[in-house]
Length: 87
Image (cartoon, rainbow, N blue to C red):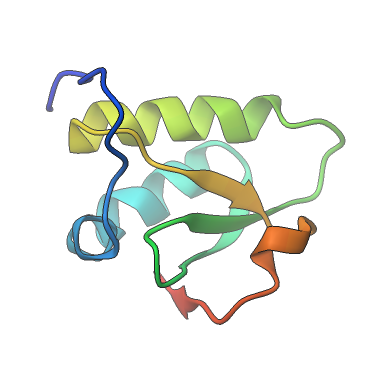
């Protein structure tokens, strides 16, 4: 497992795709579904429960795994209305 790196950089699309298996597994662990990635590397997830605590926990766990921050948004956000590819 990578240690969390602090800084201004976020995971790229290539980094997210390279880690797709672990990101899918983590999504399931946090009750998130339909993980996908957009052109910038932002992960888009669906959540059935109210609130965003699970999304924050998922983003933190993903960052720990990749060693760089992973941007995560939910599919109900206006920024999520872009083309994505499933993880």
